[in-house]
Amino acid sequence: MKIVKPASAGTLESSDIQIRVEPAEQPGIEVHLTSSVKQQFGKKIIQVIRDTLEEIGVTDAYVEAVDKGALDCAVRARTAAAAFRAADNTDYEWRVRS
Amino acid sequence: MGRVDISKIPNIDKINFNGEYTPEAVTPKSEVEMPSKVLPSIRDAIIASGLKDGMTISFHHHFRNGDYVVNMVMDEIAKLGIKDLTVAASSLASCHAPLIEHIKNGVITHIETSGMRGELAEAISRGLMDTPVVFRSHGGRADAIKNDEIHIDVAFLGAPSCDVLGNANGYTRDESGATMCGSLGYAKVDAEFSDCAIVITDHIVPYPNTPLALPAVHIRYVVEVEELGDPEGIMSGATRYTKNPKELMIAKNAANVIEHSGYFYDGFAMQMGSGGAALATARFLREKMEEKGIKAHFALGGITGQIVEMHEAGLIKKILDVQSFDLTAAESLKNNRFHTQIDGCFYAGYDYKGAAVNALDFVVLSALEIDTDFNVNVLTGSDGVIRGAIGGHPDTAAGAKMSVVVAPLTRGRIPTIVDRVNTVVTPGITVDVVVTDQGIAVNPNRPDIIEKLEAADILLTDIESLKVRAEKIVGKPDPIKFKDRVVALSLYRDNSIIDVIRQIDEDDEDE
Image: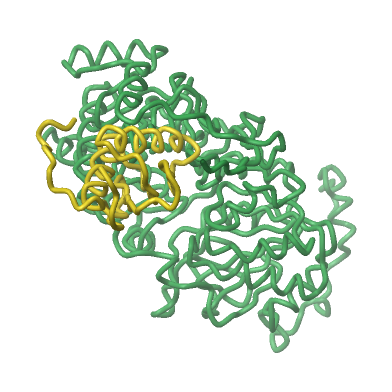
């Protein structure tokens, strides 16, 4: 899935994460994370974002994530939503996503 | 005198020393005058006090985050060029960020306090001070002052009302529109045991300013200023009950635990912390008290409007108030005969066996972190940064027959129940019951409570299971990183060192 424009999902509310996905300037996935729990969960959050993008077939993207203590399920949902929007793709099956 | 042998009076030498009465020694009535201790400015009072480099000064925290006194006084001290001071405050708040400059300039070289928040706390967590800050409980501080472990050279005590002699109080009956903070409990020991106590007031009222918190006999000087603080920050209106369903659920569970613990009987004594869930517990308890016709003999501690309402409804006979948390509590202190202000030693002193905390049946307390040994942290955040206060937490937990700690299992992504708390404030051996939104755990060292709760069909789990449950929701956190350098000590209420706080290590590795 190719990222064609910047798009975002999520809010800056407590327990949420705001994900902004943009076309990559160089190949691969680059994640920039700001998080209130970066010390304790930063690596985990970045891993979940990468895994989610990989699952939906995104190989090149720049991701800006502002986390306010979201659980993994929220990180996955926001990442996928932002990526689909950024890819201008509506061909998703939410029901089968976990 | 003949047959009477006055030489047998043991102190006759001293009486003789005063000589024989002469009418000339009596001051003529026309010359009798009440003295005034009022000085024109804070600067004058500092100079008069003889404050010098290296001395210890103190402040109270009854103006909470609205306080102007600390910053006003420190600015004047800095202008006078006095350096190397120890600040021994009963607590500090976010509004005290200007102290950072005074630390950088060498005016303040050591701090002792119950708590610290905001920019000052952040800076100290990042290594601002060369000497570690000393954190004490309210009882520990009061005792340390009484026992001269903290020797206060000059105390600067803000008071909403004071007469020219120095009789001071946290409210006034003589003037309307005065600032109001209610109890001045923590300032009482400073006034009594400091070498020089200065009252800073925004209302000089006619003598005698009774009822009073700080008696003139302990006060050397009085200074009048325009404003003591921001009334909004000093006091809010009545503290509201939480509407947060999670907190209500915790509160309901806590009230059930108390009801069946054996400590809920006619004539019990209680203390409620000021957190949302702790306060809400009072509401559920009230329902149970009304239902069963049970009354409390007294309520202790930081007092809120909720406790006052129960007092005024006849459900709590007496209130012992070391700190009034809201305007309703302050008004009640002024108006209710059996709402009494008490000092820090009376409240929670460690080496005073008669401290009020020792008469508590139960206390409900909040927590930032609780570990699987039941140790509680209320001082540092999950990121290791100082953002809280010890307060009376360890004092009441140790004194009360049952301490109940209430907390959500997780806050956002932060687990509350952990393997090891960042900073031990209250030792686990004094923590009896932990109530979360997802389960209740009783300390195994209290089989008596376990037995009572099980008999009442209250579902219990163990602390380890609560920790596992929290981890299942949020994941296992990576440990936060600290440098070796110690930035603060956490003292237990007997003023022994229970833990240290290290400088946070923020070397940020981005990916």
